[in-house]
Image (tube, rainbow, N blue to C red):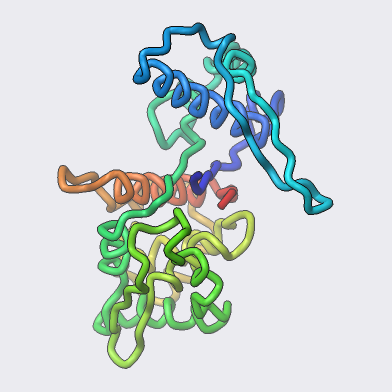
Length: 266
């Protein structure tokens, strides 16, 4: 389980297979590789065409449907990506330096360290413009974080930390539930105008700008990547969740710079 995201930059592979089709094949390949590793760890040397696992899903009529998935079938479907991989060379939408690098994920459970790291990116009251922007965004969107409460129940796999963390910004408090809602539950896609807000609020780009300049960021300038470089550099202390969060923000930055949405599948 993961938060999947895609930079909606049009290209030949997306036209051939659609973004959902590419994502489905990438997820299928990753799932097949995990199953193969599990079989090998258990000293099972069967070839992939003799491996299978049960997959359950809820149908539109409310019933549960269970299928047996063959691992080789998943690998064969993922192999349909191979003839299209060369289109990714030099693509400006790549976050990862690999084929289909405009697709990324944040795996569940999200670590406590990543949630604390996210809180630390928020502006303090002395950074008045970014702080006001955050307050206004939470208020205008009605972001109270309540929708995330059930994701923290003891039997849920989404967060390591089951308690809600918060940071006091002057007289105003912001919780990790609110941040999750702000980032991932505002709709199925983050448009460039909203991406600009998130990049400033979480200090993925510089904040030392006046209000008129900030207002122009709803559509990125032609030299966006040069004028507003990405600030979230990797660190040796980052755990997997923090690394994946930073990759997500980089994807958000690239999508904003290209003036295209970032598609979300939470």
